[in-house]
Amino acid sequence: MEQIIITGLNIEQLKQILIDAFKGVTEEKGKFKNQNSFPVKEDKFISRKETATLLHISLPTLNDLTKDGTLKSYLIGKRVLYKPEEVSEAVLQRNFTEIKRKK
Image (cartoon, rainbow, N blue to C red):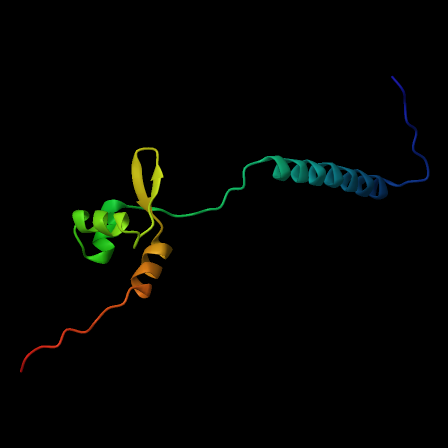
């Protein structure tokens, strides 16, 4: 095994050189890992029951809104889930008409 003799450096300088070297190695590992890994975005999903409760509608009505494309759903495993942001956006985009009552 070869030996390396370092002269002219004090302990603090040597520590800093080693720290910089390890930072470079770990940063390169991180770049490599990010390039080859699947991009993960943290999304929160809510269940059909939670979505129906949020909208104050029944589950069959929620199913109809999903089928006609008003609400976007995600099939994850065997579960149908919704993103709360997309549910609220769909509600805001929907045109609601005011009911006129007779006096």
